[in-house]
Length: 90
Image (cartoon, rainbow, N blue to C red):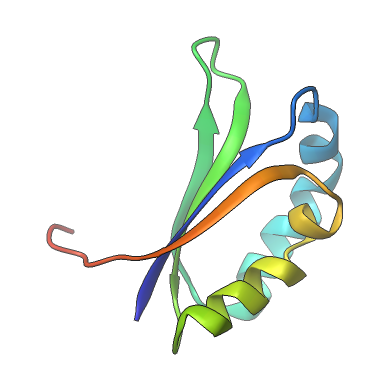
């Protein structure tokens, strides 16, 4: 099952994102369920959130993955949404 994780950073949290980025990327590599991922950007090109597509068994597994993400553990996000996603193209 594919799940889109859409997360928005807390205001003025860019430094938290930068400080935990390496841990976050290692977590993605180690867990092996991320199909696509990348930062959401503001008009100036600064990172303000994340879009991650997970391939997992169910929404509960996606929520567990999200909760263990170093970004989440560091308190980066103000809002996280987990939505079932159907790949049509790509």
